[in-house]
Image (tube, rainbow, N blue to C red; front, side, top):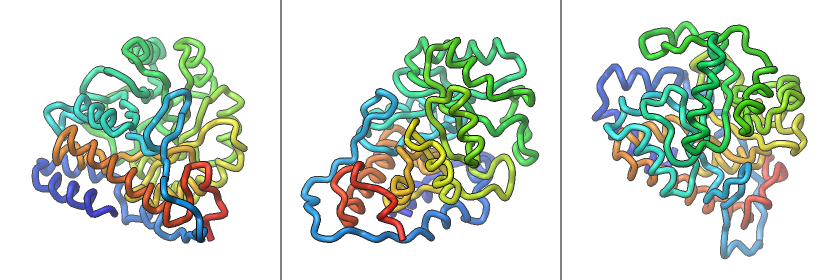
Length: 310
């Protein structure tokens, strides 16, 4: 983990109430997700001109300063008084993009993407999405691994009435009704990746919900190559789960990810220092990515491919 991220986590642990700290830590498990990234080994190039390293990209029509995005996490008012407004401000200042959670404690504002759960009440689901679209959301991220909540997550914080009858058809329905591209989050298998593409997904997010749904799910570092190979470049593939350094990001990109999402590091950053903390977290990760890319002999994201990995 980057020293900056470790310091932000330490500060957040000092200031957060016990019950909020337990909520943030839910699903952390035994470090297997982080360990899966650390187990990967690199084969760097030598004697490449890396005087200038560029980590910028365009993702579904949005120019970004780096491939490190803010993943959807709920109830930011429990972490900082300015809540999601501070998180979004920090992300914008860092040239990043925030995926707002459907469980956000503030209405969507500014720019970014909107994460959505399919509810039993489909009209309520659609109304959530339309409000976000009208407020500036440029894409939907449909969480696909919550037909109902995992046993460990049931409680007062998890009060949305989710739909066990959600299907692949909901991808096309949301896209048609909102006019927005729909990415599907929670994909860990080749067959599901292909099914989502056929159903109209504009992108995929390889995710195991941070271990907060089904226990013993495969680490995303292990699932990512299978999904990337299935997609064959037709849509962007993003990944989350245990990413804590520029080296982790580099490995994800080398495996074929277009970008990564970070969750807990941003939550710690928000709790420790509000918008400034979030900006510092994202800039720190982006700077670390540029540094290790240079050491690996890559001066742009286009130079990063699977040949870097042993």
